Amino acid sequence: MRKPLIAGNWKMNLLCSQVPAYFQTLMQSLKGKPGQRTVDILLAVPAPFLSLAREMAERDGLLIAAQTVHEKAEGAFTGEISLPMLLDLGVSWTLVGHSERRQYFNETDRSVALKARAAVERGVTPIVCVGETKDEREKSLTETVLRRQLETVLAELPRDADWVIAYEPVWAIGTGLTASDQQAQDAHAFIRQLLRQHSGEHADAMRILYGGSVKSSNAAGLFKQPDIDGALVGGASLDPLEFARIIDSMS
Ligand code: 13P
Image (cartoon, rainbow, N blue to C red):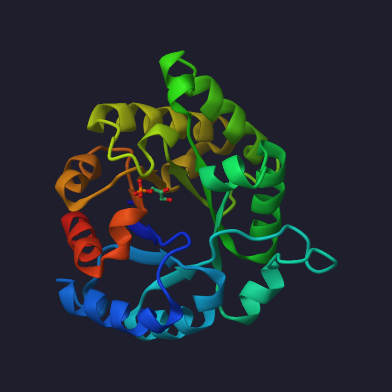
């Protein structure tokens, strides 16, 4: 069975000085005790908070991820963060190819695939984000877009690679519009079928998260779907009480 993963993506929000109080409130609000948890909990925090968040997460049994990473190990790439730098901080997860990275920072299917491959090669687990825009959905191009985005990544990865996929329809991110349970399930089932073609049985062990306006009011319905293995939560993860409610609706 796949262990659910509930991930929060803080994007460019909060301050480092708020991290301790966030963790304290989150841990106090969660129903399950760390040793008895049936879900993995992850936070993708801004780079300046990685070190502190990693220390706190270790104590509380949480996972910490970067929000993006560069595929090269070192060099003249001002402002970028490398995989060895993450590992040096004890961070072994990263988001890759979030739609905001694709939209505002010109990341392409190809660059996303190279980052995912570099991460897997270094033992950092990438959460690769895919999803169609509103225009693409309206033109019935959802499956075409998912296939293109995923096949580029799959071509770079070994069949049994350790990675996670987040299906985040762009039209549902930060808009309050959530994919219906059925729309999300259909996309996830399509993704799993693509994975099966590439990775065989390993596809059944891989976690596929849903992202896009997930809240405590809609999480339970999404989590009941057979191919939805958790969530990547943006805005609602900034409030530790609300994030705890989302986590508890999966456990
Ligand atoms: P929202 O939950 O704010 O829609 O953001 C989703 C997202 O982009 C998570 O990566």
